[in-house]
Length: 497
Image 1 (tube, rainbow, N blue to C red):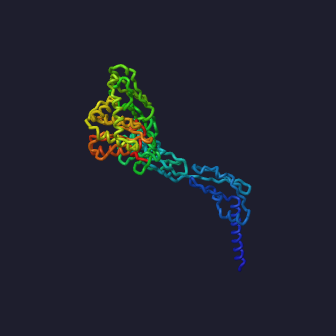
Image 2: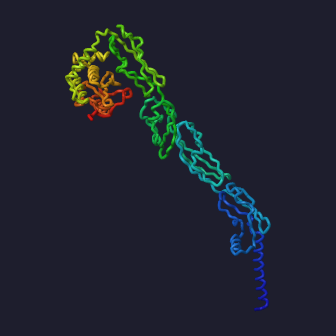
Image 3: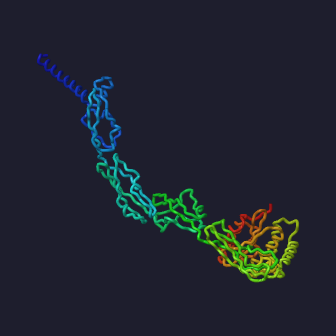
């Protein structure tokens, strides 16, 4: 090899060595890039991202070659990655402070994830309710077009949403606002039963359904006056919306006094102004029947007035009047009725009969020995019983009165029941048997077939009344009576032990 060629090789190698050493020197003294740019929201930025040759730095560290002593002074946690801008980042390199520039930029538009909104008419509505979330690295401003058209009125509104981030990137999405035509406050009368959720709708709307929320019992709220927040779910297409509406339960109806009729009182004979008279109200409890007989002189013949009054908890008042005729006691037939009772029971019953067998004999006597004529004097049960025993004729009050006399004579407690709701009155007995009350109606009923209202419970009576009303529309609800006005009754027919 020539001397010239050797010199050229040595020179080239020297140049390469100088370049390598120069590169090392440059890296050792100035390893940082002048600046880097990242997208706003970046979360995985590292110290080595600022180096010109991070691989070389990592290799030196790997082989424990301490050519570069580099430490980041600026904490990355102090840099707001969600705010575009330029930020200085300082490093301590081999004892000297070097600075590089971090640029945070935002080039991506926001992503709006919308939702449809269901409102009750009159409810306030905010633009934020239409957004499930906005995905963007920076703060965004939200605008809603179309919301100003909603003024509390029902309908379907198209809402256009615009999200703008800090550097002006925009995105738009549309959704819908369904405004329900509902009653913000519904008033109902105390005693209303089974109020459907649809009653809160002002008008029927296609595709809309209202339901009470799960585990809510509307009937509990209907039992007492007051204002209640009612939890409902509105179903509009595939959307569900929980809304709370107000129910006001008010009591404007006065109590109803039933069974008031003109009376005949015999001087010296026991008498009750309350017999057959009852009071009912749409709110059970707290309603009493007051009888004002202060204007009646039971010791002097004449015509008087007795006043029945009642007031419920809401202050509603009811008043009924009846005429009371006071007659001399020698016209009373209480003694004759007592003899009829004694003789009849001796004839139709025996000592070895069970209680139900005795009651059955009493039922058959009244049912078969009295002929229905359709009229009677209903002013006095004793006189009605007397006429029934004597003439064997009368109407339902006569059947009740004769049965009442015989049942009482046989040692059973009983009270009178009056039909509710029909144009004509109907009377029958309730008998207490083994601490339960049973229906006992001896009055014949055309078209009743084999039915006997003998010691039966509420269920049998209601079932017959329903079937009988279907076959005889003129006598619908034949056995309708105000259940709260009487003692609790048995549900089924009485049986021997």
